[in-house]
Length: 122
Image 1 (cartoon, one colour):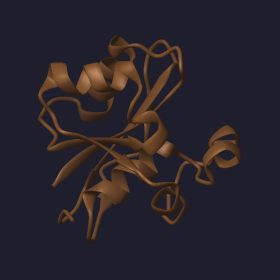
Image 2 (cartoon, rainbow, N blue to C red):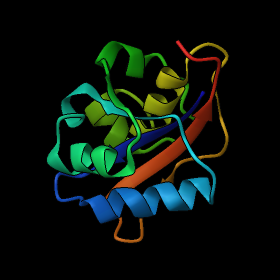
Image 3 (cartoon, rainbow, N blue to C red):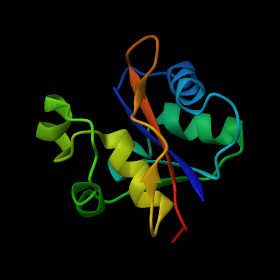
Image 4 (tube, rainbow, N blue to C red):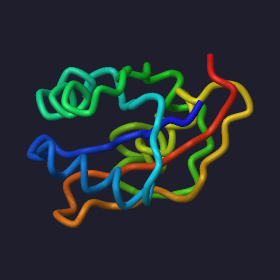
């Protein structure tokens, strides 16, 4: 299972998410989109998932907090208890033996981050 995990600001748009995914993935496809539970209902995230035809899920705070995200963003640490919401969401959603393909990337407008993880699924 290949998962794109996202972190994003309230002002992010579908274009922000799309740009972050393109920068992180560099081609290819993902099986699922993931972000924090509370962000999974954001209009831009829901619309992006619907437009791309990729299933989207929200990850609970307890699962986000236990992921070993290599990026150390002070803002993410304070708000989410993890160094990168995008990395933690991708790892949690990818399931058993999940690993990041690379560190999270930031969209050109700096409103969204995306990380890609691969794992054995739930």
